[in-house]
Figure 1 (tube, rainbow, N blue to C red):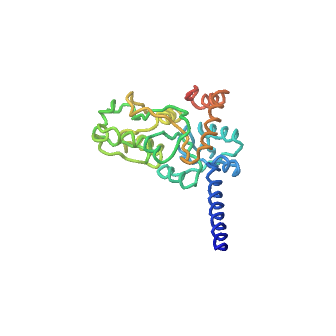
Figure 2: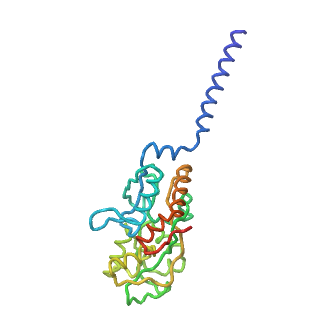
Length: 268
């Protein structure tokens, strides 16, 4: 009986020891910021044909508002910004699979996306706008009836069309493209009658390319941009939010905004 008692005591101590080890792991909690710093880089997923947020210029360089903002933020975190062009319709999956660390590319914060990922604090306000050729008979949203409308696949523009029951029921076709520039090019040659796109992109594209386009006065809804982050990466998200707040407070974000938009459009 004495030997049995000793054996039971050993078993109990072993179980307690294992439980303690498990608790220690749990107590460690979220280590996403620590992991990023140890890795020394943040892999940023983006659509590299989304001017002025992120795009390849005539010299083959990746440039844009979000590119500059991300580089500065990563520098302040003590890590390198590594940009990884990713197909937009699979970018959330790439984030959750660990292929990228964030989505930083004018990504709209939506209820649907919030079910799958988290976001930084909003940093820019935007609208989903309708772009048409000058002289078009499309003057209002009602005029889209029977028209072919272009938009980017799995974009907030596509979502805005589908969520507007009147528009989605009246149009002839919603034609989706791998990126917004392709949609706008098809608008120019008449393959679509209108394109639903982020107002920021639409106006910048028209200005930079001297296109004979115009933006309808009516839009398909206001929205905010945020940096897409995995839900479990809480410490990293909090650190990124802190850095972005610092950039707003010290005027760095304002300088970057004025470089690309000629005004400060950062949300406070």
